[in-house]
Length: 163
Image (cartoon, rainbow, N blue to C red; front, side, top):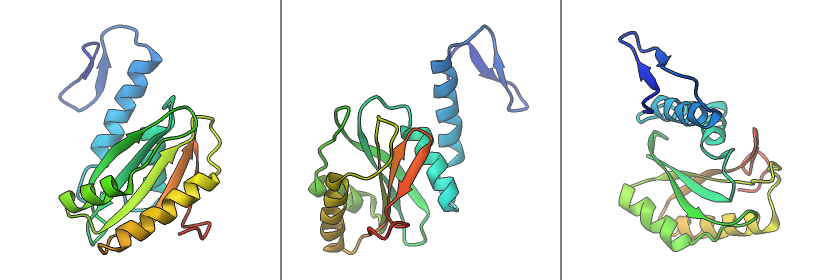
């Protein structure tokens, strides 16, 4: 935690001096991350979207992440796996499969951001999702959804019938 921000015994946050928006945003990310730790914090699509918005909305370049889940859809981990440019990120299915096996994940939620603020999936987004469905399917890992974050908006591949 930043030295200008502390927590008192009641769990309230206290500021010792004026802070920048970057400090507030980082604090908010930390609070959200604490709220969504294992075992069962992503209880709804809304919880999941809010968590992913907090993780990716302010990124200046594309970041591809994965929420790793167990058979009961309990969160094992969220990891940012691939980093790209302002309009693309190269995703390696082999590395996603490898990490799923390392974490013993049974189900995943894929996610990435569009720094443009427009969460509409591109043909490349759809193509990599299909490749990941095929690759993960070979080792019996299910993709629950792929959520694209564009600012405070999201698009769900599952809701669009793309998975």
